[in-house]
Amino acid sequence: MTKSFNKQMLQAYFICGTQDIKGEGKSIVSVLTEALDAGITAYQFREKGPTALTGDDKLKLARTLKRICDYFDVPFIVDDDVDLAKLVEADGVHVGQKDKKVNQVISEVGDQMFVGLSCDTADQIEEANQIKGLSYIGSGPAFPTQSKDDADPVIGPDGIKQLVAISKLPIVAIGGITEDNIAELEGTGVAGASVISMVAQSDDVKRTVGIIKRTFSE
Image (cartoon, rainbow, N blue to C red; front, side, top):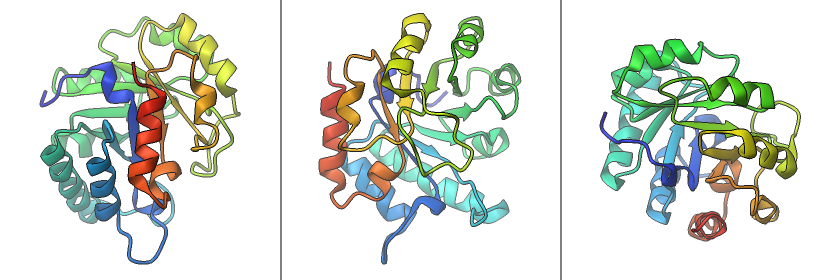
């Protein structure tokens, strides 16, 4: 494993693929570099949707983004694609309830990567509590989101707080988090916020990342 997991990695957790980049002159490389320079604590490469890169193009981009994360000493996490994660020697891999079974993923990556899992219900949390080798949980949507076409029903800050109360693992909140509503997550017990648009489409990434980090500073 290149980077061992610690829950501080969840404080300002940025998720982004090429489909999330908007605005003239912007690229995923420039946006990620700016976000890393601003202080994000983890990056997840999530390349999904009809415009997503595939094959060699996806692999080449992933390797480029991994090198940038390495330069800033920030963990590089791959969403769902275990084969890609292995090829680029990612630090972690994140899977959802609809993806490959998490126990199989943990078995495949061994001690070479940490593994995160999306859990949005109490039953899913209880199951996750029994999984050996799981590092963290992503829970939400905290608020309505436009970034994921297949997003689950909103559970809100109160719902996330209830999941934190029964989870044996650190939880990062996800879904629809903005500069205007992030303060509502204070007091829920989450380790941080996982965001897409809040950073990818920010007009001042340094300010935005600063808000996230201050919200979850210990």
